[in-house]
Length: 300
View 1 (tube, rainbow, N blue to C red):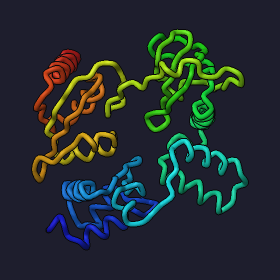
View 2 (spheres, rainbow, N blue to C red; view 1 turned 180 degrees about the vertical axis):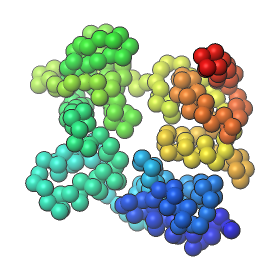
View 3 (cartoon, one colour; view 1 turned 120 degrees about the horizontal axis):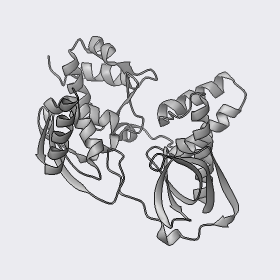
View 4 (cartoon, one colour; view 1 turned 135 degrees about the vertical axis):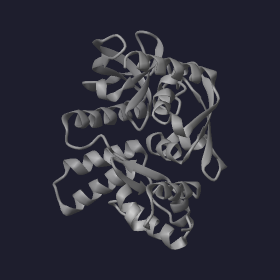
């Protein structure tokens, strides 16, 4: 069986571009192929400009893929614009048209924070208010923010200046501590934007370095891994920004090279895939994984 069979690839592309996408089992039946071969097909598509998304147990081709952008023009909204439109549609009368628009926004912009649950609806409102504060350069109060570090709940007076991590985090300058901090949108009860207080510390606004595993911090550790097909696909699915850190080594392997701020993110990912990963550079990562393995064995 040729992994580059045009008819198989066309069938796979057509199915993955549909609103329902495809599960791994459906792709195996569609291609009459093993799971390993399906991973090769997905890797081939990624290498040729298709952005493969995974939501729950289903796979899709993103409409923002380079190949599709070149094939046909499209209207693209930012995440913040998509959130705003989604809230407008959700607040309107339920019709077949509004339902269709809402489903397309969920499908094309990966708006996962909306599913009718109170937490997710609160996050949507908070994102909308944070977007307003950023656009109009206003200070805001993060009401009843729960800090995982200090195990406390308090109000935080901040200058929000950027959303990050698919709008689940917001980068702020905290006025009381005079420090840039990253706040989780889900940990805010609500956001109150000031009508009078504008940014007064814009010159101090600095985005922290955030690695592809979504850990932020001032330190950087350089790591180089040689990975197989399984790790390659999981990296794309779970950490899409990792795509920029990958280059092909041979037909079955890729080199992942990046800076990380903490070994927690990459270490947690690597622990379950050690048979598919070789550490080419990064003694700190080796030590971290060795300590974690010793801890696990000691508690077994």
